[in-house]
Image: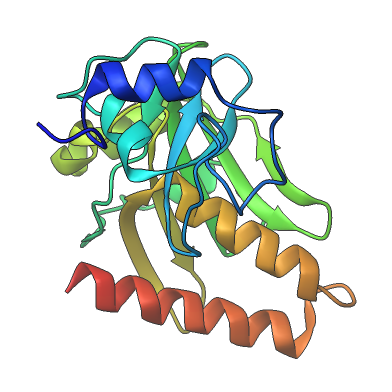
Length: 205
């Protein structure tokens, strides 16, 4: 076992970490430099995403020595042929064409969010409507609480559904918030949305 993946070595680095550096440049746990493409860990207490080096991320996977408060965000991308019974989408009460859903283990419920000019806007989700979606889509039962999400785009031109890491959803929300113009987001935001779903298709292939 190398020092990078040794849980004891990782914990020692966390304890000895200097004052927390700027997010995105270093691991939020131990302070090591991280590349632009890096792993994330969810703090289930604060619901925050933490940028991590590979060693710290491995510590909080299902095979790691950590657990509980921190959960590693997996890298699974899965294209879904989502089955939605007539009227079921309306029951979810999502006012826009794109939304993502994840299981909040702290609350014991499913949270629904959609992009908006203010960021991720939460929608109250009727549990019975989600349960009906599970009946028709057994694969959703494999979705890991807190760290994976179902993201859906449904409009006149699209009917896309993917099971993705939760950080991918927040990446989309942040990008749309940066580009959003006017009532419907504007051309740049729509192009960003198209590019995002194209990337999902590539990663799920």
